[in-house]
Length: 284
Image (cartoon, rainbow, N blue to C red; front, side, top):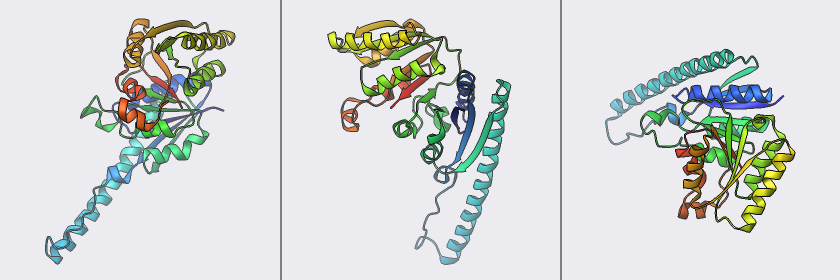
C-alpha cells in the first residue's frame, strides 16, 4: 500500500498539510503517516555556562532552575505534540480516511524525514511553519534541505487547500523534470487533472523538441497536455502562467543546478515555492 508522510508542527499551515494529504491518499489509495517532531534545539532553552559571572551558590541555584524549566518545557512540548496529532487524526478522519498512523518522535525534521522517507511514496509539508506569523514571506527553515534530501516526490502546501482540477508542469528537459513526467505517466495521483506543459527560459528548437517529446509521453498515458513555450525569466513566466492558466497545482523539478550556481544567480525552485500561491509538487 502506498504511504504518504505528512509532516506537521501544528502551525497555521498544518490543516493544509492534512487536507492535501487526504486528497493524495484518496487518489493513491494510500495510508497517511502523520509525523510530529520534538526538536530539542527548538523546544528547550540552552543551558549556558555562567562560571565566573555569578557566585557559586547563585550559579548552582540558577542551573537547577534552568534544568527544571527545561524539563517543564519538554513535558509541555510532548503534551502539545499529542494535541497536534489528535487534531491531525480528526481532520483526516473527517475527510473520510481510516488508515492513519500518527507518530511523535524526538529529533529535527531532517532526521525524521531521513528515518521515515524511505518507506513513503510522497512527502507532504507546509511551506512555512511556526514562524509564519512572524515572517509570512520566509520559508520553513529546513524546507530546502528536506527537499534536497528526499528521494521521493515532495508536495509543499500553501496555507489553504483548493480542489485540484488543473495543473502546470514546468518542463526544462532536465533529469528532475523528466522524473516529473515519468511520475505523471505512472501514478494515479495526477490522472484526470487538466494538464498544461510549459517550457521557458531559452526556447530554441531543442527545447521545443523536448517539450513535444514530453507531451507525447503524457498523451500515450492518456493525459492530453496543452503545451506552452514562452521565452523569458523562468520565475516570472512560471508565476504568470500559473495565474493565467488558473492552475491549482505546480509540478516541477527541484534544484537542477549546483549550490554554487544557485548562490550566484539564485534558485528558481526556492523562489517558486516561496511565492507560488498553489501547492508545488517537486522532484529531485
